[in-house]
Length: 113
Image (cartoon, rainbow, N blue to C red; front, side):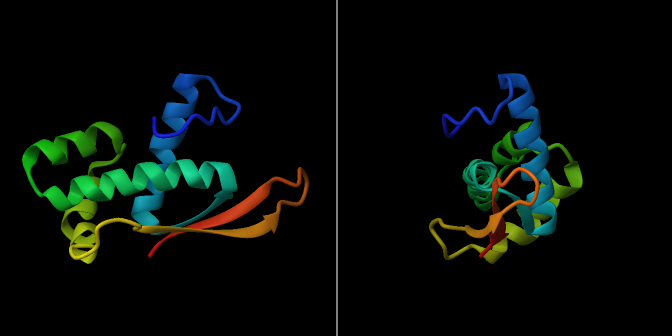
């Protein structure tokens, strides 16, 4: 895990939640979530895009071990990685959008640059 944020969950719950959110984020390219979750998702999504740029079978299998849907992994290697060929990092952007109504959690929009 890249960070030390516990996000109010046990380690297996946190790992499952992050895997699913990273998969959904890579599928759509944009996500609205809490700021702390967005920072964790951003770190993992950038690692997956870096794997996608390697374009070999070992990297594809590593990505499939984390991403929960095979069609998203294929999209990552075929489309998303090509988009960032000349870029060395910084594939995502986290923008704060204010507090959430109800519990006042700091919300953010996470998007691919």
